[in-house]
Every structure is written in structure tokens, then in C-alpha cells.
Length: 458
Image (cartoon, rainbow, N blue to C red; front, top):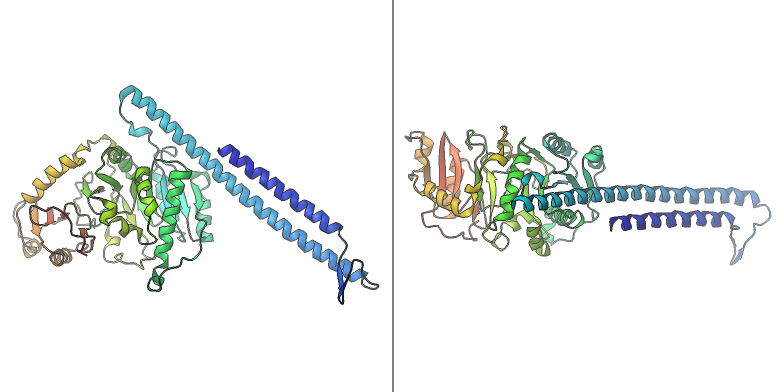
């Protein structure tokens, strides 16, 4: 199919160039037409020969110049399209090889070998030339170009950013969102135009990954994220769990409350289930995209993901210590949360061999049993007792809330993010937010017997 498509493009280009060549010759061979009053003459009048000859040369010269510019631009675009076609061919060959390898492995042992899974990295870019920082780290830590191909999808049409991306050559695939037009939005949403464009870009880019490149999963990274050294190891290890557990719908590299001093530095391998969609470096499967794509929102896609209609009681996996760090203070959110929270997030600096660790504890039944026992066996204390630093013993402690107001008060007092999305607190699981404080594990939790979130809590 790709070969036929490439041949059609080349034939079309040939016909285009040939037609323009014929047009040039026809124009050069035509007599000039000069208007006289209300009639037309096809020959120059006496005394006008030199003027018309000069004008003719200039006019035809301009025509030839313009046509050649069109031809050159078309050839440049043709080369760009051919390059993309070759990249798609290469991506599909790698994917086919991965599928064949997996089939052979499954026939031998009936288990999936994670070392042969191809997981592309989709970098969402716009007008930040600092995307270089993101790409440099991805390329520095990438263990295999074949298993982790990088696709940079650029919106905005920003020339300088495009040059930075193009400078990486064959190390990545550069695709460009074709629709750069403004979006018609309600008058009250004019200041949110950027969020509408971001949602449009995500929709287009994910369709490219799953439908054009034919991948079965993807890791999404924004252009203002720096990744940790074990970023690829982390996602590689969790890919099989995401595929096999229907109660999960994503894997994220981000901990919303992962500030320095709020995470256990000795537990860099610790992972959690969370009901809050974290984003900021996350993996999803094609099956989920097929579910979400028909109803993809016009704007605010991340909060839309957090709504019960999309989440459907499914969870994500997130780490104790983040595997991504955002350095993009400026953006459509105008630095919201950045100065107060995001710039303090700790990036993991210890490589964890996740593919060699037993992660079965994250399966829902096992996890829920151990999680509830750990949380509700911890003694209840007050915020004042936590802040006094006079609690005795190394064990975990619990502070309790019963309303959105009491949760926000506790979170603010303790320095955590206090917002709720559809009733779910950031990094929360079954209403519980886990964090580290002064060397102890602390849980902000609802009363025992929690059953479900209240979407009106916000």
C-alpha cells in the first residue's frame, strides 16, 4: 500500500512539472495581446516594439520565476512526504518484526517477552525551542531506537522550533499538524483558545500514531518534560500489566505530590495505583484510544479524562518518585501551579531495574487488600500533631477528612495540592492520598468504609 502511495505521488509530481513546462513554452510562444480602446490587437503598434519586447521579457521572466518557485516548493514538499512515507514504512517494518518475534516467543512459552515490545514515544511540540532539552534526554537514555522510536508531532507552525526538531535527522520522525486555523469558541472561552488547539492536536497526533503508523501503544511526552534515566525501563516493565489488567487504563511517570521532602528517597522502586489521571508522561493502549476517540473533547482534554464517564472506575499506575520533570513555566496555563508546586517535583536519580522486579502486587485484588490494611491500621492523628514533630514511633499515621472543605484544609496545611477533579484528589486512590513527611508515611484518608467518589466535590 505504501509503495503504491509513493508511486502515485511521484507520478503526480512528474505530471505537475511536465504541465508547468508545457505552460511555459506555450506562454513564450504566444504573441502579446495589447488592448486598444474597445478592441484587441494581437500585434504591437508602430513604435511599441521595444517596449512590448522588454515588457514581454520581464512578464515572461516573472512567470517563469514564479512557476519555478512553485515547482521547487512542490519538490521540497514531495521530498518531505516521501521522507515521512519512508519513516512510516520503517516504523511498520519494526512493528511487524516485533509482532513476529512476540508470536514466536508465545508459541515457545505462552508468555509475552517485554524485551521485544515496540513502544513509540510521542512528543507533543508547539513553539518551544527548548524541546531540545526534552529530546536530548530521551535520546541519551533511550536503550533502543528500534524498540522506542520517537515521533515528534508539532503544532503551531513555529519555524525555529521546527528547525530544532529537524536537526535530529533520522534519530526521530517529525510530523506536523496540518490545521493551524483558529477555532470558533464561545465568547466566554476566547482566552482558552490555546486549550482548544491543544485538544485538536492531541486528537490528530494520536490518530497518526495508532492509525497511520499502526502502533498498539504509545508513551506521550510534552515538549517541556525532562525524563529520568529509568524512564524507558519503567514503561517497558509496566506495559504487560497495562495490557493484562482491565482495571487499569494508563501508566504515568508523574506524582502530583512528588515534591522534595514529600517522597521517600529510599523507595524509588515503589509504585502505586491511583484514581487520578496524572498525565505528564503517560502510556495508553490503542484499545483505549478507540474508545475515547469518537467522543474526544474540543478542549480541556485532561480534565475530561478525569470525568467518571471516561475513567469508568479504572486506575493508573504512578511512581513514588516522578520519572518526569516539567521545566515549562510558560504555556497556555500561564504558570498555574508551577511556582508553588511543579518546580519542586523531585526527579528520580537512581536507576531502578523494573523489568527484573515482581510487580504483581499492583494487581487490583492484591493491592486493595494490602492498601486498606496499611492505611486503616495506621493511628489517626491531627494536623497539629503532625506539624509538631512530636509523634513517636516510625510507623505510618493517618489524618481523616469527611468533606471537600476538610480535605482542602488538610492538604493546604500540609503543603499538598488541594484541588479535586470530579471528586478525586490528586494522586489519590480510594479517596486516600499517600505522602512522606519528616521520615514517616502519612495518609490523608476518608473514614473506613469508603465506597465511591462524589463528582460534586471540586
